[in-house]
Length: 346
Image (tube, rainbow, N blue to C red):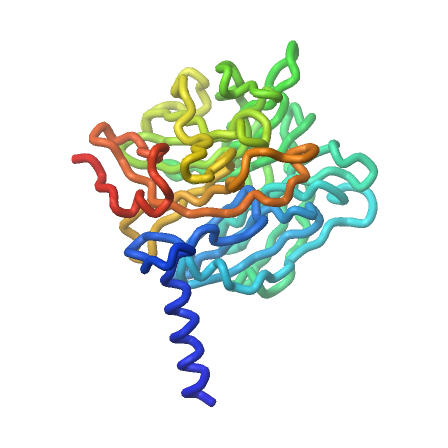
């Protein structure tokens, strides 16, 4: 029996090293998509394990997967750790969960509407003191309340110079209907400091296609700067990634500290059947030496009905490179696995 299982493992492992084209995968290349019908993907690495969490197309539950490799996420079993309420808050539109280990506990941050009003979107948290987040009990910590708290979602958190921050999305204007990015210091894993400021809202044409949207922030600190990607426009082929950055020594609560590139950094590329890429997260390779971007995209352009309810946003992975100026190089004109062959610029 042991030998049989060993042979089976070898066969599965070998198959996982092949792309859809039958080519052997090289180092830091990926068997994309690494998760079908999973949007807003977030991957965190802890003690050699990759934990994967994302939006499911039914918008009704939160799942976790664990794998020793990024490619292994594809076949890792999905464990349901929480389901929506039948009535009241947290009863609809369960969106964009993220998993973070903070002060000895696991936390899941997510957005949800109410069962009676799916557009009454607010941000919430769950906690779990188990060492393994796929086990133990997930406790509802309630709503993470911010000052405007009108249409608030897509919270993420990061630590910089010993201070934990949260970045999230809410209405950012009193004159137009939009969403923008807010930042605040955190006073606990579930509470925000009083100073809460907008650091980005839609201003360019690529941020305002169908809807005026800045959402899905993700942070990576490198080369003396704090970089923040975000997603813009409607969740169809217009969806794309923009980039903000601040100097690492700057006051992150001063909107003037943040700079926005006037053009998107990652967007639809029909050559690679990559439509509407967005809502990414960052992790590192198995050896810890290479930055990896996890994102979602569709492989077709035309959508019937409202794009939000088209289920086929699939999770993909690709290497993130860096320019000689220390800026992230997203490889817009390269396929996912071509990024593994590209060199960082000296």
